[in-house]
Length: 463
Ligand code: HSE
Image (spheres, rainbow, N blue to C red):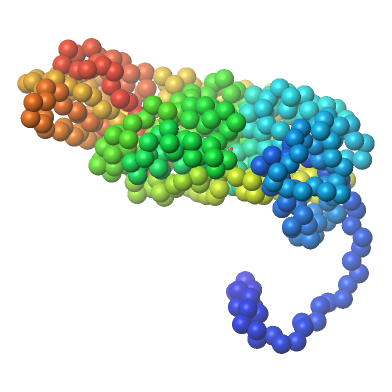
């Protein structure tokens, strides 16, 4: 509606000198919903602060007066001041608090978090969590427990921080067959790749990402792709109506990437991003996270720093792109609070009124299998170091040709004075990973080629 911005400008410029009469109406007292927060670290304090700051909006949207009445943290919080609110150092005190309807789990980790969530469900509390590892690894068990108890278990903040991608997939795109998803879903890796692209050292940038609070407690989860795999498996289940199967996600991180390859990729018209990819093939689902070359003209190729972006292609809607902050206190709090509001709105409704946890009712139908990586279809960027003598390139080309793989692009650098080896960079056509790897092994076995090759997958993301 165009009059809202116009009204906003008029107000800013002081055109209204008298108060606008409000329509008088009876505002009934709102019912109260009591919430407990376990964990007052970055996200816990972010949630606490935003809940206080935006209380009027939040209550009006929920149609309830939402009160944080109990918080728990092993250590005294440094980023928020919960004075006047019951405080416990034992997080399980929150679960035992009979006054609470909603427990928010923001402690992270898996084992204690699982115990906490199971006990909260058993106590009949609705649960909100931002814990992707917990949902990815134990989600099937937790959803079943919540279903049996008739309580909500909400996890919008678990994937892509502040981007409401769970709701987009589960509700906004519910009428589509989701064909594929490609997402930058680990902010730390994206931050490191962006800075490495400017010529900075990996270790220095990782330390910076940790200092800024982007990285997981164990940053191996970020740089080895595990955090992205946790998020991808959740998206994959919603998109393809399959149970959560974290152990079947192919996972590769950014820790072995060299700045040299980022530069060669750019020379060829690509940028390297750490992507989570879901592809719904007729015979099964590809679920993989790995560094990926993508054409520089794609919007997602320009998503830099700690930002996340998720491209989703549905058969009806076509491609859609969701972009926003994937980590940080208040972006993540934004998603946590959306879940609290949704539960508060429905707190008096029967469980059947709620959206199913993964967006579909499992009724015993056979789920699509998850394909092993050898069955996935992709193309590759290769960098090889080759003895500078006649016949090397011909031998490599012969192997690819005999394997039915085309060379789509190639750069060979001239040998500098005194140099006996030269780099060759090439891009292959698409093929099954198993066939590609066989051809690469044959190339590595050539005596002119120095093994191992540098191999990075490439996706065109063009439908
Ligand atoms: N370590 C995560 C990231 C935080 O960098 O994306 C948000 O899940």
